[in-house]
Length: 419
Ligand code: RNT
Ligand code: ZN
Image (cartoon, rainbow, N blue to C red):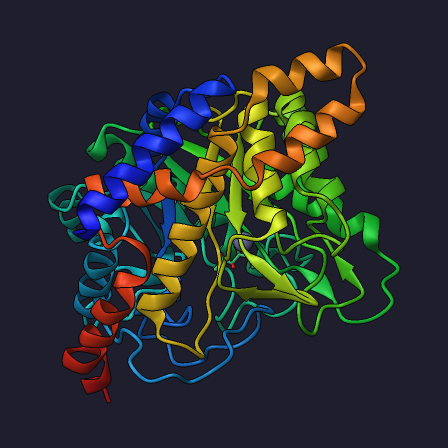
């Protein structure tokens, strides 16, 4: 039997099987089709960017590995993203950092950046059916140091305030251009390596800096603030901790970004969804895979992401959650890393969308906890994979492991030639 026929047959059977437990497969597929994932541009080049500033230092993030073929310029990055898009179904977004502007040979410092450097990106995104999201960049710069927006030194602080304001302006222009809000994330590494006694002071400064940055209201962009547990070299104290940003977000109605690598490893990020939704306007996700620490491994379909997707669906919150990715593995084929991570995220949402929720809720309401656990357990092995294959087939992207060969070919023809 031809693969296409097999996929279709398995899908038909799966559909019936799901219908029997009250799950509408077609409506699940429709929702998956509409799920736009914000793809991180920085997996393509190991978070290097295209600035012409010489001294890159500070900031507590780092890609590990030196697999050949990273994108070295805007054109290569775009080509790589286009390749990735041929292997994942659905319409997606691209998340850019400020350091990915089209600066050419110019030296454009971070407090000088304007929307002009992103006009080309906007046009390209439009032509390729992508929407753009944005990030300010406070790491990897001579002025990064240990403190940026929380720096008591007024000159350094103002430099970063100016940078972040300009990033909001760029985001606004992107949002306007694409007629869809650009989601702008602010993550800063500010912290200290060792025992810190002025914790209160730096947090107060950060609050003030954010207030100044957010003073201007925009219509076509949305602000997100991302907390972190610690950074490399900044292990003892993080100014922008989760308590800090959750408090700020709840008070000032800003979106809190949940990076799945930014919490204690036994903490459930899934459990945070239903709390945040009560007190902050929306949620931004940075889906990542921490191994022992915030290692930013490629996302795979594991329990953490499966639970996270389920909590979003159970809270009926797809409309309020922006699903972004944040992993960067420089030790394997980077196109492959993207495709694995995006598809894993989609699989997690598909599983969640196929959960027999009505029945599970009924059991819970009636206090039938054995039945609830049994159905949760059995639904793990319902034929969701047949629905997944079908999704890929109708989206005209590789079914199953068929993408491996495509990525190998791209490596032979393109990325391996980048020296
Ligand atoms: C760092 C944060 C942040 C970055 C990107 C590149 O720990 O997760 O989101 O990974 O902005
Ligand atoms: Zn992140």
